[in-house]
Structure formats: structure tokens, C-alpha cells
Length: 505
Image 1 (cartoon, rainbow, N blue to C red):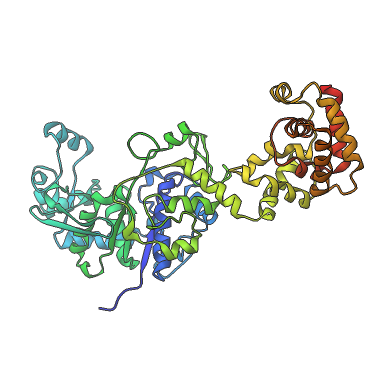
Image 2 (image 1 turned 180 degrees about the vertical axis):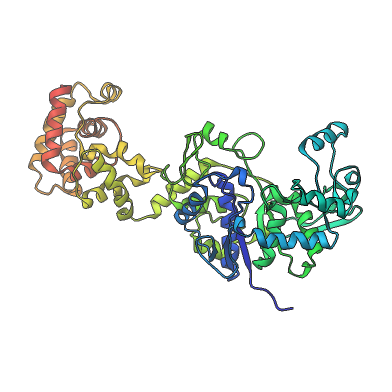
């Protein structure tokens, strides 16, 4: 049999914002598809109509657009295997439900919620399976004629998959190897509900994966328990030869303590767990997003790629193209990956350093303008060049850099006590005279004249520079002093010096 073209899919449910764990799953699918010259399909699983949240589908699509993860076909992209929204495939699923019923691989069950609850109270750890199904209200007990009559009368029902006991089910996982499970521990899962005429996740996924020619299913570890059922369903349909290969990714774990990463962890520790800011249409609650928090999409991608996968080298910074070339699904960890959000911040800092001063200046310029400063992009770029290595996010530049554009109106009390000596006013007056006479006000020109003056008068360089910094900046922080004064220019530098002398004495 000819080898099939690799086709993978990402199939979120529009029940709320996209969790960062879902983003990582999509990323690994994308990398796998690109690496093998395959297709990446975007499918929407909206069979659970009760949990549908308006705006969620659009949010998911916008998230991937921002992240730069591109799909080849699916909802919003078109393709030959549509429709790609499960709610639009009702009639397709009904054919396959009928096929399972006709072949005796499934049966109709009429048990009400009250009857099921009563059975759970009666039997500890009750499971609807080969041992209990003949004590329940279903077509296996009632017979076809009675079952058909009930359906004709409009009685609600579900279709359950009939799992035979005593069988070893093998799931061949690309990360975990051969996973073997006894069919006895599986229950007769509901595949279809007459109430909304929609299938459950289990049936819809199998049918869609088969019809859309999906070759590999790469998904979160939480879906591993359902994999044996999916294997059995493929067999029941006679689709063994086209069964996709599975890969179940490790969970994303809390940054501290045990358990799966949750939104509460992000709220408590101050980091996002969603790619974009999410406004809950039901509660009005606003949840932070990586985009609005100031992260670069490339940094988020790089950070997520290394959560659960290791390239086997010391390299940490990868472009998306480099990830495509390097990624190996078999090198994913079997155990969960701790969500080190501080590492995510580190990645963003590294991407600030990697980006050109011009790119960062384009992002910083509107912040400068919003603070009432009319400054040229060229001047903003000069400031970025001096200061970008000191921040993790572009938004952090303004508090650090505002002194370049706005003179200090007050002077930090602690710095004044520590750095402004009894003789500082006299020294700054002299320094002003030196700088006023320097012909070349470049960094080098200033530095040469000032250093000669300091040596000639046997002043302590630290005392001079600390007082100079306080006068120009208002606090004891910032880049090199001659970088600052060269940027400010002679007139502004002398104005700030004289003001500090007048106020601090």
C-alpha cells in the first residue's frame, strides 16, 4: 500500500478561550505537518451545543493568526473535505450511527437520568458495560420492535457502543510506545444523542478523522484514556488500514505544586494562560492574554515548543522554521512539563534583543506619544538602542526612559542623601562650565574634556558622575552619562545641571 500523505488536525471546541496547552498541541501538529510536507486541518468540534460560547470560534482563529500558525484547510480556509464544523455534519454522522446499529456493534438505550442515578446509587462504581447492560432499558433487552415503537413515539434515546469484554486493546503511541488496555475496564460509551441529533466527541472524531484522511492524531495526554475506544471504533467500521497513528503529549503542569496548569495559577502568580485577552460574554470577566501583556508571538511559540520537547542540544532560541527542521515527536517527554512562566519572560527579553532597534522603536513610539511627547522616530530609536537590553517588555521602556524626553521635576530622596555631597553644587557648576566650552559635544568629545578636568582637580570620578546622573536623570539609574548628555544635547544638559544646582544646593 502506498504511503499516505501526512495529514494532522487541530479540533478545538468553541466553549471559551483557547488554553495555552491547546496552543502547544496545535503548534506540535503544525511542526509535524510542515516537517513531513503534510497538511494541517482546522476543525471545530461543536457537538456539545449546551457549552457553546459566542465569540469563542473567532477568538481561536484570531489567536492562531497572531501566533503565525497557519492551517492548510478547514473552517475559514476551505478544502475538499468539508464541512469542517461538526454541527454542519449531522447527516453524515447519522449514516455511521445506522451502520453500527445494523451491524450489531451498537444499540439504542432509553435509560433516563433518574434511572442511571438510581443504578449508580445501587451499584458502587457502576459502569454501563457487558456486565450491567442487560439490566438496563435498551434495545438489547427490549428487542427491535419495542425499541422502534418507542423511537416512533418520540421517546429520547442515546446510541451506545457495544464493547465486548476479554479483549486486549493495543494503542501504538509515537511517544509512549505500545499502550495495552483490557476492554473490560471500558464502558459502553454514548455515541449519539437523539435530544440534539448530534454525535458525541468519540463518534464524531473517528468519522471525521477517517473521512478527512487524517494520518496522525497528536493530542493532549488527557485524551489517552479514550484512545482504546477509538481503536475499537475503527475496527468496528472496518477501517483498521487507515487508522491514524497516535501521539499523546505530556500535560502542562502548575509552576509550583502538583496538578494540571489552570487559569487560577495564572491569576495567582500573575501570568496569562490564554494567547489573547478574553472577555467572558456571560460573566463579563476579563482574562489576560499573552498578546496584550506585551509578549512577541515568536517568543510564545519558542517557549511553548520546549515545554515537553527537548531538541537534545543546548540551543534554546529557535525560529519557527528552525523548529520545523529540528522537531522530533518521538523526543517528547512522557511525563508532564512544569509551566515555568519566568522562562517565558526570559524568552521575550531575548526576542527584544534579537529584534532591530527600528522594530522596537516602532512599537515604543506610540507609547512616547501617548505620554505627551512629540519626538522623532530617529530619536526614539536612539533611546531604544541604549535601553532595550534592560527590559523584558516594550511597555517597560517608558518608566525607564522617560527622563530622555522629560526633565526630572524632582530628585529621588534616597539618591540625594547618598550621592549629592556638600561639594556637589560647586563641582556641577564647574562641570557646566567645562561642558559649555566643549566644541565637540559627542560622547567622545565630552568624555575627553571631563576626564581631563577631573584629573586636573583630583576629584573623585564616582562623586562627579553620581551627582551628574542625579542632575540629568533625577535618580541613580540609566546608561552611561555621556550617552545621556550627548542625546540631550548641550542646551538641555546645561539647563538640567543648573536646575539641580538651584534646587539641591
